[in-house]
Every structure is written in C-alpha cells, then in structure tokens.
Length: 480
Ligand code: ADP
Image (cartoon, rainbow, N blue to C red; front, top):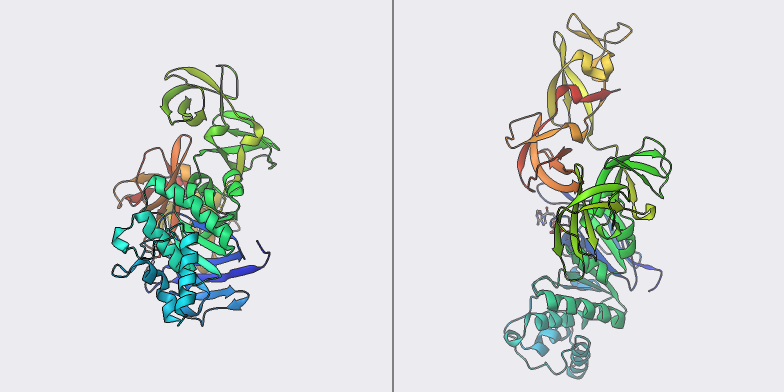
C-alpha cells in the first residue's frame, strides 16, 4: 500500500431537495491500494458517499479529490473509478463474454485485446471458460463475480462496491468475502466497500470508517474500532458490548454497576463516563470472588461458546464463556482493568440554547430547542432572578433585557421519560436510535425540526416509534 492519498473528501456535505443534510461536513482520506469499508446502519449515508465518488451525485459543498485533483467536473465515465452494485445489473440478453466486454467495445478496444482482457478477469474471479454462458444459467454468486469482472476489466484505479454481497446466502457470502480480499491483493487497486454488516467490515478491511447519521464516528483499523471504540455508538454497533453509566472516583478507579473497578484510563475524580466491556472479557468466577456478584438468568450455546446472562442487582451483564453454567447459579464476575474501556460521557448531550420569552406573575415562559415550558422564576439559574411588576429582575434588582439573556438549558437523560402519546410532555419526536446500558436503554429522539434529545428509559421501544418526552419542570436546569 502506498502512502499517498488517492481519494480525499474535503468538508463534503450533501443535501437533497428537502434540504435535510444527509452528509454533514465529512473529511476522509483514502490511501492508494487500501481496502476501505464504509460501515453504518441503513440510511447513514454510505451509498451517497459512494455515489459522489463515482460521479453519480455531487456534493452540495466541499470537494472530492482524486490524486490531489478536484474531480467534480468529471462525469462518471471519465473517472478512473468503477462501481459494483448490490443488484448485479448484468444484461440478461447478453452472454458472459458480452457482458464483460461491453465497456471495452464502447471504447473501441480490438477483438484480440478484448479476448485477452476478458480471459484475464474471468481467471481473477475464478470463472475460467465461462465466456459463452448465458446470465440466467448462473448462480447468484457467479453473477456477482461477473459483475466484479465487468467492473475490473476497465482497470480502474478505484473499485467501489455497494453492498455487493448482500443478496448472497451466508455460506456464499463468507466465501466471496475471502475471494474479494484475495482479488484486492492480486489487483493492488483501491477498494471502497460499503456494508451495514460489522462482521463483514472487520473481516475484510484495512481501514473501517464508521458512519452514523451522515457523520463519521470513527476511522481506524478493525482492531482499533473493536478494541478502542471512540464513542458509545461505535461500541454498541460493533460487536456485542456491555455499557454502564458511571463516575471516575480517582485516576484509574471507576464506579459503575454499584461496584468499584480498577481501570487503565486516567480521568479526574468526578468525570462522568460510560464503561464498555466486551462479553468475552468477563470471567465467571466463584461466588464471593470478582468485583460483581450475580445470578445466571439464561444460557445459550452458540457452537463454540455460551452466551450467559448474569443479573447483578439491577444490572445485567452478557458474558461469553466456554464453560457451561446453569440458570439460577450464583456466580462472581471478574473484569481485568485493561478489559474496561472508559469513554468520557458527552457533556453536550441535551444542552440547548434557551431564552425567556414571557414574564408572568410568578413564572416565566422558557423557550429552548423546540420546547416552550412555563417555569417558576425561582427555578431559573438557581434563583438568580425575581419578578417585579411583570419584569424580570437580576440579583442586583435591575430589570433584565430578555433579548440579551441567553441561557444554557439542559436536562439529565435519566430524569426524562418517554410517553407513547406524542402529545404528552414538552416535545414529541421519533426514536432514531437506541442502545442498552446495563439496566436501561438510552434513546435518541429526533423532533420534526431535526433536534435530538436523549432519554433513558427502562422499557424497550422501537426505532421509528413516535413518542412524547416528559421532563419534570423542576429537573430542567438553566445556567447563564
Ligand atoms: P445508506 O447507504 O447508508 O443506507 P443512503 O446514502 O442511501 O444511506 O441514504 C442516506 C440518506 O439520504 C437517507 O436518509 C436517504 O433517505 C436519503 N436519500 C438518499 N438518496 C436520496 C434522494 N435521491 N433524495 C432524497 N433523499 C435521499
């Protein structure tokens, strides 16, 4: 792999007609010869990025460079880039040879050269001698190989692969993953691969780009992404994770799940954290040993290991182990310090700019994000203000100009609640993502104005559920 960047995305954003930004200011460098995978849940913008590199869509702002040059003026056919699509898009009325040679014929390549090139790529995709076969006589896996052959016969510098294996059955998919990897090695060109399947991404790539909601969450080797997730989204999306909210007690000592743990991460006392522990990194030990005590609640055999759930007080831990334990067995759980990955809690969550828009007798109307709530004046900024003759007064008894007063309004996700009646509470929205944290779920709810709120709830809701968000008024914090 060379050290030069073949593709570079510089501050790339993309909005469609309805003006919602589906790609939000992305910067990404892809090296020559690299196997890069764009990984993320459906709708996060993977295909849009691929289409912009291929030239089928253009960024709303920002630039895409190929070998250091802006490629925006180039139409798809002028870019040294070919795409393999999810649906193979082969011509059903042409045989294998004519499907592969289609692009070469358009370019006026001689018959002899064409024969030679088709033969070469059929060798690479392991379908030697298939030239005369009709497309409808091929299996799904074979059709996918022909689609790859058709893309690489043009000798692109970059091959774009848009979920090319998703239509194949499990076994064929595994086989094709290995074959694609060896094709990548053999060809030495850059592969940009799109998938929502984290296992596929980790198996195949030199570099994984984890995306959510049009933004890059983390870029790294598969090992980096798995062992050092940059945030809770990545930890939850890649592999199985136990996640707990907690607090640092001092450097290298954290408290979570009502226990104290030695860690390898340094954060000052009082720092709010999320602790991430992989199920395979927890040891089941004798009762009384380890940091946590619990009872086995379920055991499932997965071929090579047991998925064992252990309830420790109100917290649940998933453990992958090789020994069989039994339901209702009392056990201890031991976690070594280097198996606890500490992520600093994102303190910007649920913080919004707020203004007082109306002063009543003893209360004020507070507007923030897309909520309007009436609050007792004593609840604003820990009682810094009073009301006199319908005017807001500061602690020095001076009238406050409401236009000048900007407040930091926040609420703790744990203090909010979801309601299945979207009319309940201060604002309504749709659940766009969630993950499980030891004893509850953390939900991100997006309002119709595209504002996100995070709410903890012990009940299981679904993505797409329309909900109301209830925050008790006395738990909405305001600060200057
Ligand atoms: P992914 O490949 O990760 O599943 P896409 O890149 O296909 O995601 O889509 C990202 C977002 O952009 C989605 O919300 C999708 O609905 C939206 N989108 C994609 N294409 C268009 C389009 N032509 N017009 C409007 N919205 C689009």
